[in-house]
Image (cartoon, rainbow, N blue to C red):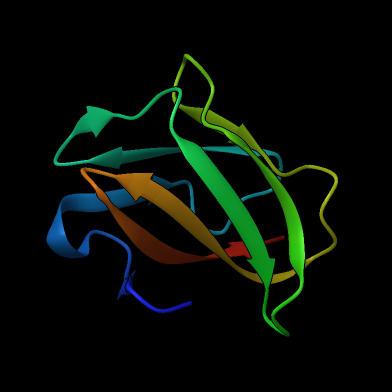
Length: 88
């Protein structure tokens, strides 16, 4: 979508850990855990898999997703960011 800044792991302070992920991962920006922030997970063919809010503990559970490469879009500091992750 327009206005989304694609980011790689650790670039611009954003981090997904672990990546690749089997069950859940945490997402942070500049070493600050994110929580209660909206997100969408998009498959590599552009299908929206699900929406939600980052948990209070900074985690997102993706255990139900099939193994593939995905993009997570988050809204933080008045703009959307996109980060690629691998689901084992």
